[in-house]
Length: 72
Image (cartoon, helix red, strand yellow):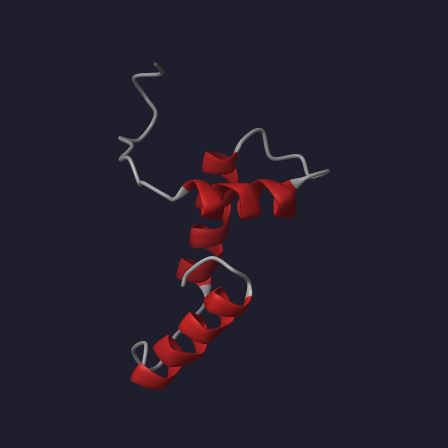
């Protein structure tokens, strides 16, 4: 492990979500799901947000995840 690398934390994802991420990243230059998820989350953090995540945002996100089969 590189001592100059920032500390890392584990995030647990369901197998179903990981399979979906693997399908999305197929053909990309990402070496693994961890790198892909870190890239996506870093991009989200870079986007300015004037208001917090609303209940409506959460409802739409849950509907989208449900339609994609990620949640029941």
